[in-house]
Image (cartoon, helix red, strand yellow):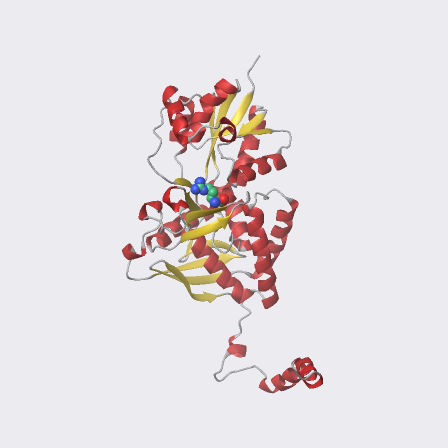
Length: 396
Ligand code: ARG
């Protein structure tokens, strides 16, 4: 009889590499690894490694386009930034990985899926809840939650099993995709200590950033960025391009003490150059094209949307309801924003839109003013009426 199969989300790192022989021994199952490219990995190298550590089969998926179009850009349109700091790179990648796990499990006839998350992070929640939403019949196994091995134990296990991996000397735990790089552990665990330069990889320190600013012009169509400096690009290329341009100017470093879903505070450092530029630019275009009420209601939705993403609730009706609102708000968010990148800062330099609500004739103090100044008198008389009434009737 054929052995049962489990699909393991495989990154090629120590945890998931140790998990392959561990599964073979402990569960007596065939391990099929599944690696998703979210923009930062060499799929073939990882695939080869999966087979070397004992996977029965190694699957790979190019998830870049889906990540950008189905997760990153909707979150951008929503203005989703967790606790006003974190653009949610890791959090937005997880539901896509969950979906790929489920698709692979169905294609391979697996009874379970597995991942290398620990028992104290947010990612286990995002993957477990994501999988259970999409495929309630699938079992989810998280070896790291079960095996009780320390990192040192894992390294010894890897040696004893002749696994061809040499665990990186890096003292940090890093997760990355197109939307950003998340770095934690090591000395970052002391929130008083400034992050060392080695924690960063995508961004230059301000001291090494060019003295001359760079200007970047982003074009949006209904809230989706479609071109930079007049050049139309796919979402994937556009995000990669902005990561490199803005990163070179030191833009996108974020140092955040955040509230995890499991109740603890953790200090994490992020690098998200493209996400920072795009959020700044997108918001600037909205100030021009949305009404005051729309902007304010949308800001509340943005916070809710960010919590939903952070808390692993992507595959919920609540999220799709929020998305419906957000998407509808974007129908006139078309135009261009010019930002200045300089020494770690990203500032809006200009914005324009064919649907702008900003009307020069109404705003100007120069000749050509179309605003009816005399109408202000009657407006203020009625607007101030309750204030006047109360202060007359109830002197304090
Ligand atoms: N704290 C971030 C989140 O929950 C990132 C988690 C992964 N970080 C890491 N360095 N491995 O979304």
